[in-house]
Picture 1: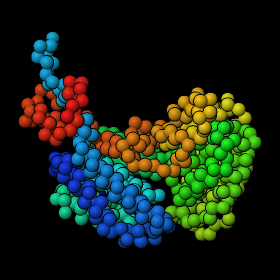
Picture 2: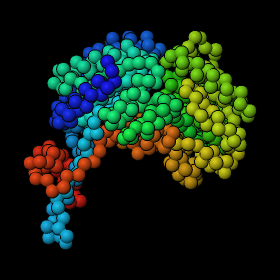
Picture 3: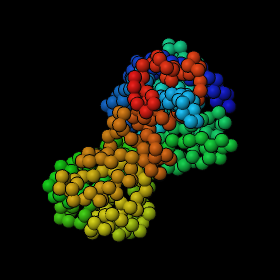
Length: 482
């Protein structure tokens, strides 16, 4: 089927779907979750074959995916996400003020690109799709070529939910294809109104450039590249080195490092405590057995990048695990000095896999310089005691400017799906730091504010009517009421 026909269908479906009540959209999302659960065993089997991910991980990821769908259903049922604002008419003002009301409305058909490292949670029925459908947008999914069978089976679950829920036939569509041509055509099509992407910096920037070349540019919400710097402050290292070594070895090697929140840069001040920590961390990483990576391309890219970095001047290998078999990664800890790090841009690049680089700083000045040399990140982590956080407030303040999520004394590799989560950050972590791809506020990527001035009550959307038939929280004349 031609892309033009697909997008025409998406636009036609949007004209119906945008008027579906929030309650019915919520029921639709819950039905998708149920249909995915009904196919759980078959989905795990095919995803395990296609992605090399362990069965337990895949089972948990399906649960995360269905939970996301159910969470957005509750957002719709509660209703205040539309941010309804009402400023009532004031005819006695000079000049008189008309009645003005505002809310968020869906933008139109959007394109979602599946991610290679999360065949469920960030792919066909993942967070981008769930949030877009919750917003009232129709979705065209570009399945990832690394797990085509998985993507197709999830799409079959969505199709069944469309039928059972009475949604427009082409509310969600599925497109496959290798190479860049299909993706470019989807982004460039004049009926596309937004794009969601999780993947490489090269892929995300390509989509961003396509969107900018259009006659009418559109937003691309791409989550791309992050090395997630972790700063180990002195008192924490002096008192908790053994525990921290185990915690961060597990974080670096979790899923063979195939997480966008993998702690790729570890930063500390030169000291005996740092040396003790590095020794224990290297030993812990060396004890991790290699596992298969997602596919041949990712494995080859990791091995090439690992080899290149270890050949860099001023970079030393601390420890690595046993030699891997075919498609397996080789968990690695390397180290360098702040002076070398500051003059070598290659050391700041993300290496997707179970790798981390320890940067040793001679003093506070070097530590600050290292942090200020970094680009935007998804996360940055503070590892410190109460004494550290009191003494190093100025450095911690710098960390908070780097990322969308600032973490205290937890590894960065867990991303909770909740209202407060921000999975985003300054470029190049994402293309727009004002938004998140995880959590309930992800819905705001697929909407735009619309103001209704001087409308009669019968003409207004339910969220803005005087009687508040949806029973949602609204801001009326600068007061939040229900």
